[in-house]
Every structure is written in structure tokens, then in C-alpha cells.
Length: 185
Image (cartoon, rainbow, N blue to C red; front, side, top):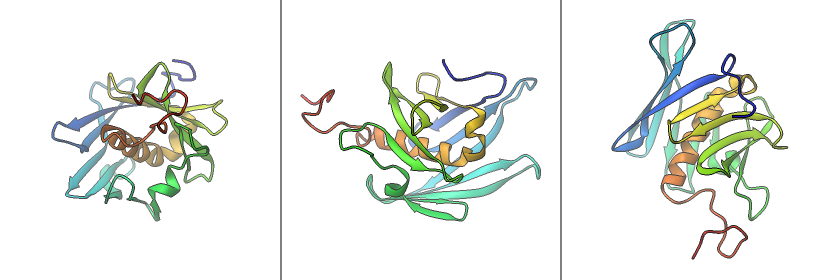
């Protein structure tokens, strides 16, 4: 896996509720510890998920934000002090693009895109596509985040979940009918 270093990357294992993928726990595995740390948990009731992040300093969970799941197209992300629509955090640069761009808390643009070798996997890269930030692999339900992504971890985790949920509902990362590479029959 190019661009990742097991000595510096965060390795986050996702455990989804079998009945509702928007309910999940995310565990951080780290060298030297036998027990993974539950870093995030998402509780979902009807159309809203609240997510909590473990604060390593205080030793308790803190409300980090929520996601309002109104429709596949109308999702509101409340991340810390920011309240954003999904359109402002997952836009296409070109009509036939399979990637979705976002401007993170650090004011830098990144994009999520399917991995060509296995389109069920997602990677987050800088807009130029030259610097890897994170990779979600569906086979082991693991998100690997390199140090470039550590300061924007909430953005990476929340948007990865939103993209996974939209894809599970056959919405996102689809090429338009008739576009090159479209799998439409």
C-alpha cells in the first residue's frame, strides 16, 4: 500500500451495527497496546447521528458533532463549530468525475475517490492526487490515515462514513449514463 507507514499512520477499525450502518464504533489500534481504543462512536436515531470522540487528555467522550440525514442529496454536517451542507463538502469538479472534493478544517482541498483496483475501497488524497491522506478498505473495514490527515481526522472520518452510506444506497461515485467507464447497461 503505497504512501502509508505503519509506524506513523492511524489505523482505525470500523464496526458497523448490522442493522444500521450509521451506528458504529471506530477503534484505534496502536503499537504496544493489547486493547484497541474506541476513538469514535456514532449513535443514530431516525435521521440524525451524533458522534463522539474520545479525548485523550480528559479521558472521556465528547460530543464532536452530528449528521442530519435528511435525504441522499440533503445531508447536513455539524462538525464542531461548522455547520455545512453535503454539497459544500462533497462536490464534483467535472461532470463525469468519480471523486468528491472537500475543503477541510485546515482550509486545504482534498478529494475522496474510489480505488480503481477495488471500487469498494475509498482513498482520500490531496486535490492534485499526488499525496495520500487516507485509505478505507472494505474487506477489513479499516481506515488508515497518514500524519497529513491527523489534524483533520474528524473531517476524514465523517466524510468517509457519508460516502460509504451514500454508496450503500447506490447514490455516490456513479458515472452518468453513457459516460466512459459507466457500468450502466
